[in-house]
Image 1 (cartoon, rainbow, N blue to C red):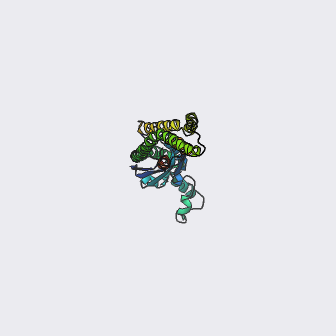
Image 2 (cartoon, rainbow, N blue to C red):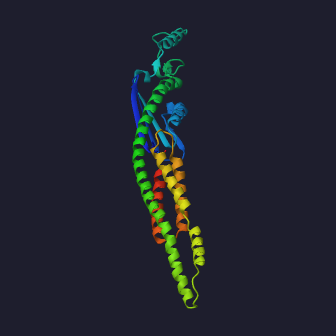
Image 3 (spheres, rainbow, N blue to C red):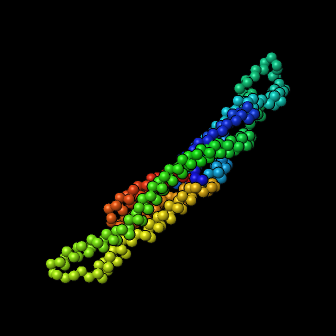
Length: 295
């Protein structure tokens, strides 16, 4: 089964009063390229998210956007009451400083070491790591579903182009033997007209020799067979089961199909064949455009 490289997936959840959300967007790219957008306090998770993503996707330009909003009571810093009491006890123990004369600056008091207890950056990462990795897996799964759905549409279009090429190629294959007979008749007529004035007769061996040269020079049977083989291989790949990436292989086969079509067009100069080759090359160009979005 072929998959498109274009897709979107998202997932969100609540955990201990904090809201987490992840979005994954992908576009076509010749290689795998990822970009992770995280809040400042979660930047340490970027390598892990990139690694998890690379295990699920093979090609495409992928952007992960993660958000976290902590509305829980743990989001606020905590005051260490025992530390404040100890500071006050030491201040009041200063000789000459009594209760009546003491004035406490709360701002200065909260700035003292050990008074404010907040969640460390590592604690926050540990809390978010488990949640975000799970959400990423869910979002990527939804993205893959969308990629597969678009890949099915691509497969149908690619089959249409392949069928069109096969139809034109069949006509070309039937036309080539007729061309040799037509060339032989035209050559005989031309030689008879040229030799009529001198009274000389046309020798059959001369005609056969010229026809043999023409047939060898314009023989496209091998190219027609190779192009047909490429079409069969192309169809087998886009119809195959499994999730193995096939975009690069399809692109290479399309290049080879175009090569064979160009050779056929250059070797066989018949008008009808040339028209068919133009149609074949047009269909191959459309195939090449579409396989650029196949993973």
